[in-house]
Structure formats: structure tokens, C-alpha cells
Image 1: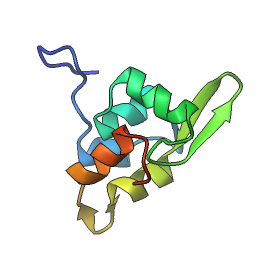
Image 2 (image 1 turned 30 degrees about the horizontal axis):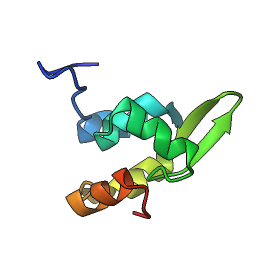
Image 3 (image 1 turned 90 degrees about the vertical axis):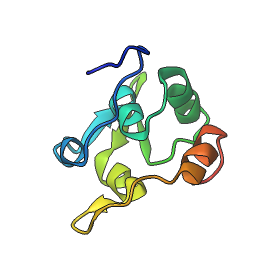
Image 4 (image 1 turned 135 degrees about the vertical axis):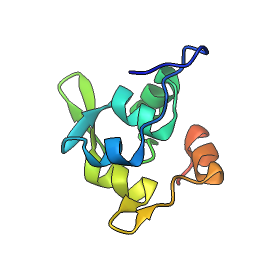
Length: 95
């Protein structure tokens, strides 16, 4: 993962998101949403992650199709997750 001097991961480009496999880990999905590690896992544990999360064994996987839907990425381009929607996700509210 590319990182800036802040130590936070750089969000994916639209092309990188479109190239993701069918399911991804929480850290990968966090990068797409611009969420930190702790916040992403906390949202997943509380069932408040901004898109569909599947519990697999002791870990979590995010369904990429739903990730694309929430980020509004598809054949019509990227609208991105609005700052309001991201704020709501960080607070554990519905996006």
C-alpha cells in the first residue's frame, strides 16, 4: 500500500477499485473508503460498515459489488462517497 508521510494509506483510484476481486479484506475496503483500521473493524463488528460485510471464520470480507455500489463506481463513472455519507459511516449511521 502506498503511504503518504502521515502514515495513512492512500485511497484507491477508480481503476484500482474496479480491478478488485469479488471479495476483499476489511483493510482493503477501508482504503477504498478512506477509513482507518480501527474505525473499519469497529464498524464491521457493530454491523455498521458502509457496505455488505461477510463474517468468514474469525475474519471479515467485504463484497466488492456492494463496495462499488456504495462508492457509486460503475459504467457511468465515479461519483465517490460524499463527505456527508462518509461522516455518517464513521458515526455508525446508515449511509
